[in-house]
Image (cartoon, rainbow, N blue to C red; front, side, top):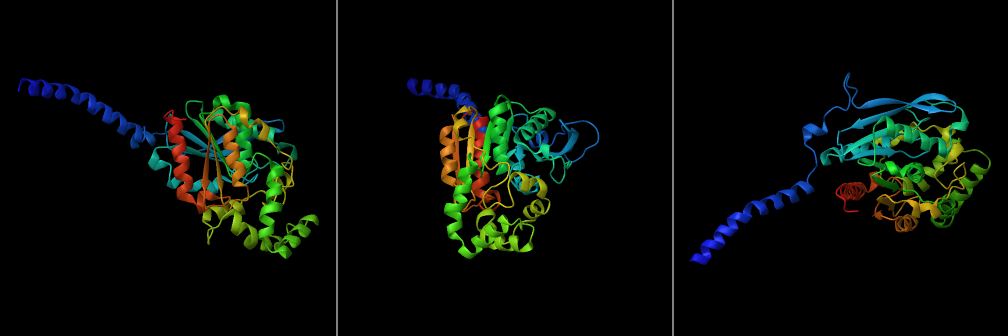
Length: 348
């Protein structure tokens, strides 16, 4: 009887400890901020729905770029880099359906030359180095730092994110390279040797001939590419969502053709010889690469990229294409959110 009484008193004494342990586990799994905190404004004055035009200094003068901040989380701030070059933030609007419920702050952003930002015409501005310095100025203007700054780049944005990390990774908390290989020549080879053989040879010949003759503004050019390539490897949804259509409609062709080439079917512009494969081992921050089975990019190459970085992880979207955030949406955002949470909680 005395033994049972001692045991009962011991259990009572330990109960608060067990309760605190249980509470701490629940807190780790739940958002780190309250709903009220998440919706706190970042700045005093007129409320703009999070939109801020950020001045960017260049050798050709000062211009402004468009940003839109959603949410407020001192530990997690995700900056999205869109593709193209010169596409828009619009296709990233799908994040609005996933991040707020997780308490994740994120910033949509149109790079210089894109639709919502200033669009200077000096071609000397369209270089990787200049874009990297632009991202750094955006980071500083938004007060992002290594305690909270997650950089997510897709396609051309993946090139830009990797280049930024190689120069400024001291400011990063986490890095995501989505749907982009680390070698553009390998990307070109994948299009020619893997994707093209899956197309009608007559279509491939016509596309190549039109490109060689500079006829990529001819309506027939996109009429060939859309059903035979874009619908299979860019976005596989039967009907493309409005944000995707708006991004394509707002693309700046002068920058896109100069840097990428006339289409997503391989690469032939200023980026054609870009290759950072040998530098992946310099990435020390937690990083994730994202690939998709039907991508314009080789998913196995993107898996390999993750093994070359010190703290790398790979996410495969089995039903997705180049825009897997749309056509394999649940897998894409579940994996992206898990990565962000794991980095924030020190599990990477």
